[in-house]
Image 1 (cartoon, helix red, strand yellow):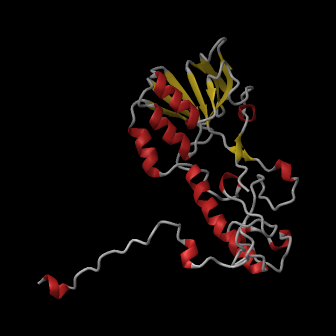
Image 2 (cartoon, one colour):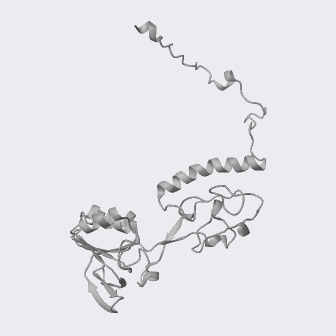
Image 3 (cartoon, one colour):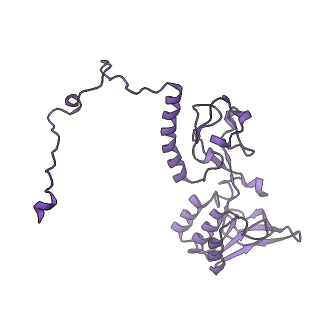
Length: 265
């Protein structure tokens, strides 16, 4: 199972627009689309990121290459709680990036396109306007698991639990220990963004998918369902001989024997 996750609507973060629907797509769901558009258009206007996670910091560094200024807006006090030190150091050294703590984006400004945002300083309860031409939002995602209607064990955010992270009471068959990527139901595996605790990256999903193939075979072996010697397509039910396995008209390539060391001296 690799149903992935969906970007959270921006209205959940205090803004009354949904992802990708604000002011003629002036609002982007993240680095994947937004940064590519900026790069191609060579945007030199000011940009704003509503994010505090590592991906937001990486996006800010990327956007600062082609933007006049990049503003990082965070709700907390500092970046230390959500980014690594090396990433924070790079942000602090970049003259085009500024960080505004204890602040939220509360409204988008503009008519035909995004012209600015309204900010709320939560410590002083004061609002202000900031002129920007692009807004990138990194406020998390929700797993595409609602259709399961609770049939598989999930964490408190709806991501699927796998392996040893599943409580014993939530296992469909408590007598069987689930494999690493196996859900609470034996034989059902979850990989990628939909899995609780996974790194939300495409490369991770690809790697876990490859692992799942092997784990599925192990589960089939444990249940006695694996077929060690499947029948042939011709219905004979036997394995092909080496001669039969070699295509007609072809012959095995024989590599010349390498000389021994004493023959080279």
